[in-house]
Length: 553
Image 1 (spheres, helix red, strand yellow):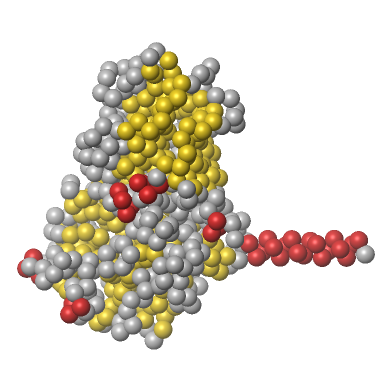
Image 2 (tube, helix red, strand yellow):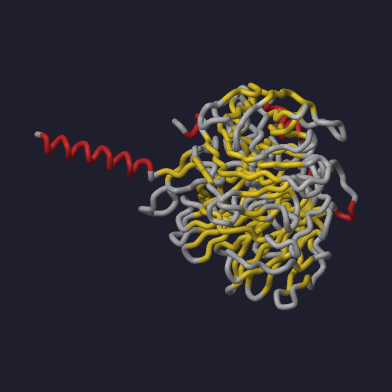
């Protein structure tokens, strides 16, 4: 009897384990990972996403099963490759495409306000990647590559015909031929799409084009409607790579804009897709989408989702079995791999700074200067720089993406301010004019802990809270995000958390209020507010934990 019970219990446990591994969790890259592009080489998959004004640029992820994703680096990790000086947070690097051909990886992308479109190459996706080759003939954004028969084509979003828009948001999709050997454009551009699926309906922002060859057809996949609530994905096809491209009569093949805004756990703004085929002949799409709260608000940015694709009468359909984008889908590939995707679901992440190397998940604002950080006795050292995060410069800031609505970030810091100008601690940051900064500082020759809200434009920050604080050597800081707002805590002894400020307005950090294309970052941040100093902040550890209800179902 006991043996039977043990067998049944074991089978139940095994069934639960297998069940847990039969689905993957969306988004596959939670938080600010927008504009995903994917390619496959053998059994290996690679994703690259936009990074805007954060450095290093263009994070690259690898998987062998479309289930477990690991970051393997950044494509642009040298200052000589990427100039982000004086760049607004939502400018910089837009919408990369990654492709592989004949032993070489290619990424094509746009550096807004600087050099425009460029190509970089590598033999190994981990790098090193080449310096950019600039493409002045490619006038627009969202470039993509297509290889066929010894020829290479660049497809991109561009100006309307004769640069005379018929309405706001009127754009075209254009194409040029590119010589890989000479690394230069070798043809005039051809307009593949004017306006969108039906120009009579004044479609806006046809963009993010990708071309694929399947059977005898060339398929042109594009985003339409703008990268907000009306975002969608549409498809065209042709028998010739240069067109004419005919739109699918059942477009869009992906959108969420028609669904009730009151639905539970909504996914919105879906679009900007890229397709990949598995070795078994199954197709999948990666695309950006958002998880909003209160209908239209989101702080965590545009995220990377993955859904199946089915071909119906020689047309691709994204998310074919559902109207709503799902949080769980069957695992794409037969695998016994344990699910270890620390970019999805309610993950916990901790860094003890004991490897003398900064983890790839951290980013800086714009190009880091040589003395931005160092390691001292298994601690991260961050000097107080004169620059602040309100400026378009490189402050002493190291960021980690907020990836959940319900989450916290915490750290232990060693810092004693020498003056009231010196401030060091943790920040939750959306852009130069939308952030909350919890700082250790000094007032009347006594240490204090303060909370600031950023000022608008060039207005000074607003002091929301200030308390005297006594601590021997180190102090722990924690920022908690919830559906009530952001709360700020400190502890002078382990786990003895004290409240500094409860539930400040989280919508202040939403894209709806702050604007732009990025997501919020938890950051380690120190500044002397333009005063000379040799002071620094030492950090023992940093940890992050997400707890969104949608992932606990």
